[in-house]
Amino acid sequence: MTNDLRDVRLQKVRMLREMGLAPYTDHYTVTHSLRDAGRLADGQSASVAGRLMALRKFGKLIFGHIEDASGSMQISLERAALTAKEFDVAKKLIDIGDFVGLSGELWTTQTGEKTVRAMALTLLAKGLRPLPEKWHGLVDGEIRSRKRYLDLISNGETRSRFVKRSRIISFIRLFLESRGFLEVETPVLQSASSGASARPFVTHHNALNRDLYLRISPETYLKRLIVGGMERVYEIGKNFRNEGIDPSHLQEFTMLEWYAAYWSYRENMALIRELVQALLTEFCGGTRVEYQGTVLDFGGEWAQIDYCDCVKNATGLDLLAYGTREDLVLAAVQHGVQMKMEDYTSLPALTDAIYKKMVRPQLIQPTFLMHHPAELVPLARRSSENARVLDMFQVVVNSWELVKAYSELIDPLEQDRRMRLQQVYRDAGDDETMMREDDYIECMEYGMPPNSGLGLGIDRMVAIVTGAESLRDVVFFPSMREEADQGATIEPAPFEREG
Image (tube, rainbow, N blue to C red):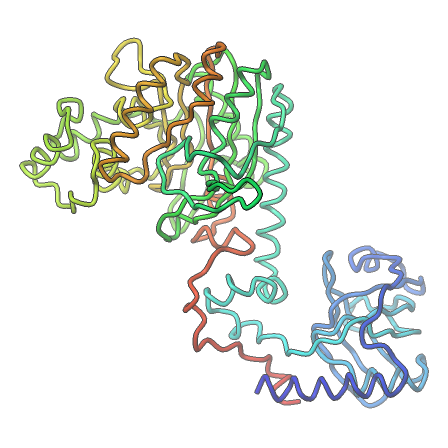
């Protein structure tokens, strides 16, 4: 059906050319957006343009609706007001989905609808494929994510969500800059995979003839700037992690990271709570948000729980009592922890997996998860009160890790020792461990001030604010499996089928 309709439209393109008309123009002078035109008094003139979304023909009178980025508006095309050629084009050669421009005057119909009466009509761009049926042709989530342009055309809710995403990011920038932070950019292509525990994507740099990694985090480069005397820096950019797909994970995602000299993780706990509460107040009208049927309360102070205590309460395991992976495997089996231990080849990987399986699904309300075992993050500072844990926290909401932050390790000798241990884990088969960065350690040896950094997942934050079920609903063009759209069909709108 779609191919048949496309053939009809191709024929109309040929007819337009035979009439001496261009089916694809180079520009059109717009004097008013549709929203602004709708505020004009009857009789005032305007030139407007947009995509034709509805068309109703009544002999010598045609009504339609066009849309632009500001909204929608009714148009009227009358035989008495247009040239014979223009009206012939309107009646026979334009279709739903075409872009049109028209100049004319405003009037109000008997039903009270503001309308532009066209005195001149220009076809700006001829659509060759029929638009999908609004309520049935694009309910398939795979198609909506793969063909986001159709989702944006058909669904005002989608457009609104992405506009809000952009404004959220602008809000974050203003918030940080008002507190003395400077926005910076660091490399996406890096010589070592560092800054997080994740499997990287690998690419080859032909000019340099060496492999590079798409960054899993900008952390070590941002801390190089701290060494260089830039005391408060932040970056909003893409990270890449070669891991599984689920509603809360994408391989390409947007992360905010900031670092502040002379801060500890405690200052970051205060600032992130202030930022999130201010953001929700701005975009949701308050700090209580309903997400997928659950009310999340971000107001006031957030609960603080100890990482090791909550794992012990859930499983009986005292994570700090086990010095090797083998010890932890044996204890986990004895305590009835049901999971595939063989999938986790290092002590940090298994520790993290037990927490994620046994504890994190129960963390729904905004929670500060504190003092992770020291083995988990090689870039974080050990606590002065208990060297077996880190000066660290995560913000967990809806069982999602929304934020990770810690006081940074600034001792280059200790950092070197920890990176050597990471290599031991990597050699044993844990391909998510960090790679050694000699240049970063050399940088630290010039002196790094005390500092604390924080990472906030932008996509997850936007999903919570907008109520999106999956992260791919807040990313314009998420990566998709190739087989996802095999056999999928996009139903044309009913008026296209009738035509």
